[in-house]
Image (cartoon, rainbow, N blue to C red; front, side, top):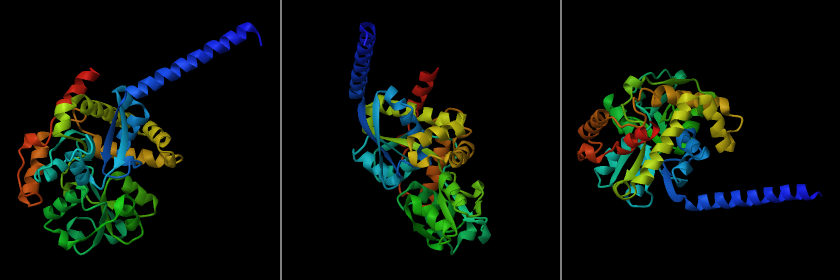
Length: 335
């Protein structure tokens, strides 16, 4: 080995050690936080978060995020309110439900202007309205997930109650698997479950969105304490997650590849992911003038309906349910 070659190798080794040390120090400097999700984090429903993590967006904000699954959105909110996590995810409706019971959480961003809850039916059953579900069996993920409350509101909108329909809580996989196995004629859930049912052979028909209660899209929730004492953490989560959503909106196909890299069980399923992400882009993420911004008028109409129908018993002041301060800061940061 020549002296010059040995010197070059030595320099490279020193550079590698220096880079490794720098990366280790950088990782050590990241603030570790737990982000609660309402279902297992490998679901395409959580693609904005998974993509943000995989592409290092949280790291750029000085955060090392660990995702932990809760038992539905209401459970997530309760855990955040109890101080078991700073932030988490649920539908934007969730603070209306839990704040009435004294749980101190707010929505700090909502990912899209559309509702995330879809009601899919077996087209062979010729069910084309919510009213036609009377006496039928359908599935939801959980009785403590906010999609269930959105379903209850949809039933009430159609003049039905929960007693008029046999609603089965089946978990994040069972919700579409029981539907696909013909053990239920309908399901209420997110777009990825619709695609899963279609690919399992169900001739899916979606109940028109005009019949579905206008609940809100997925939201980032934070406790009052976190908003007040750790705004940099909450703001970092909001900014990074919105970048993940923008990636999906800009290029669902590329986002599908990124998600499959982050969740290896989806390798080879990029085409299905692209279909799912396109549904989100079209029905959920679209038409939001400012990404992440919560529309107080929509939140107010949702609140009024929940109160008037007795889904919640107390009308919480609107300003206790949300804040747009972090979304507005994110807009400033991207200019």
